[in-house]
Length: 195
Image (cartoon, rainbow, N blue to C red; front, side):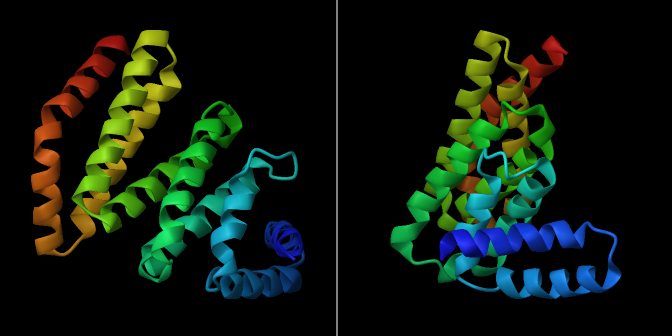
């Protein structure tokens, strides 16, 4: 059943980027409707997976659908599913980083990670910033520029997401993140030194 849904969504994405205008309209309606369902959580994860049937445009579409889902429906995702979802996104992100063609999807997943953490509170946001700093450290140590790029993308996405929150939420998140500022700035300075 799950495989069928993913195949249908892939076919609709193909039609959306195809030349047939009537099919594009039909595909768009189907995708908009699908994105509003609970199944879209797992479908979007399947679309960002490192799989030959997920070319970069499909991965990007999946990441974008996931981002919309988190922004709109995070509160409706049952608590026990949130941790595993974030773990799965994190795993997909780590894999896509190794694929230069998938950079747009990877960037979008950084935004997904930031959106989930900010909606989960100060502790989760702090943990994500720490994860970003770890990516950067490993990147500097190994000379792998992807890790450093990813760290900066996540940090920028966290800043954007925090900025979008209500004042009281923003204040709480800012208090949680203030101790990190020095480390984040140090990462940025090291990047400038390297590039």
